[in-house]
Image (cartoon, rainbow, N blue to C red; front, top):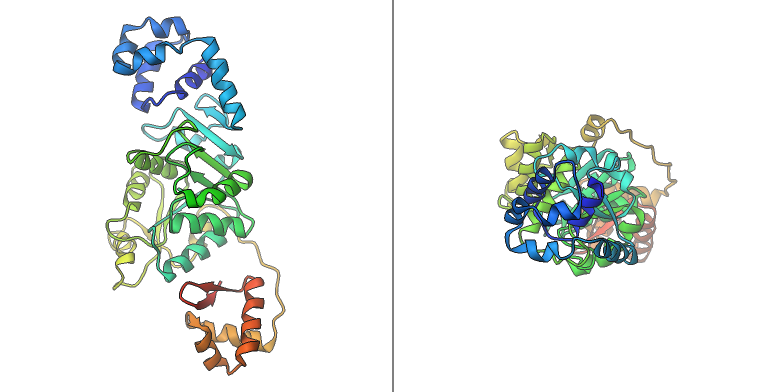
Amino acid sequence: MNKTDFLKFLSAFEISTAKIERILQEMGDTYTFERFVNSEAIEKILDNDFSKIAKRANDKFMEDYSNYLLNKNVKLVTCENENFPKKLLQIENHPFYLFYLGDLNLLNQKCVAIVGTRSPSSYGITVTERFSGEIAEAGGVIVSGLAYGVDSIAHRKALAVGGKTIAVLAGGFDHIYPQEHFSLFKEIAQKGLVISEHRPDVIALKYHFPQRNRIVAGISDALLITEAGKKSGTTITKDFALDYGVPIYAVPGNINSVKSEGTNSLIATMQGICALNTSDIINDLGLSVKKRASVQLSLQEHEILKALKNGDLTIDQICDKTKLNINSLNSLLTTLEIKGIIKRLPGGFYSLD
């Protein structure tokens, strides 16, 4: 048995990365089940878990485990594999293996983590969609944690523009959290990549989420926080990024909004670069903006866009500014939405996309 096979064996159990590192040191260059089960040092490392793990240290268990993963269509990559993300190997306490669904090659492309509040304002939704969409169009891979709010918005927008995205899970693939994002999980698995350091049947526990956040920061070339409160869970990801030397960008927000206290504080303390647009991030990562095909617009459509240039408006406000018939306006707004030029926001507002 080589080191890769031994790590595969360990991946079947919930063993901390610190313990795995100590076990590997004890095994030296000899990876056999016999050495594993007869090591007093390893027994002390695993403590109460040793007996149940040692009972499964055999070829029959490994065959059953391989079939278990195969039946679920789940793949496993260890840190010994050349396809394992190089960026992740450079962080402290890095995972020794990852379970995945999708295109593993995305991990070694230019990745931008986009995170933030789970309950964004209409402003937070707008800037998250804008940054995620433009970075994805430029070839950046959007990374996030499949959570409510900014995470899911960033994933969905990347997919909507035909870009790539990576979802990092806190639990196994059999227990998607939140459950409402199961269809999003399936779409990302088909069009992008989903990764976890946990077996498919493992339910996400509270302490798994900070562990997830270290991977989000660890695989990314930049971290963007679009909207976050002062005590947001986003702080954990930010702290990991600081430790790893990952550049942090923050979108400024209304100084009177509690939802922007976190991002404004990052900018004020110079922990985060003020992100007013995507060009700095795109240029810093060596990406290139793709020009959109020009779209022919009618005079009435131009009037609507002119009205929306100064901010979000309701249909009544647009009607008042453009003097267009309400029935015609409804049709025009729908057409502009389909063209991807404007979008409908919560509360009945419209904004430029």
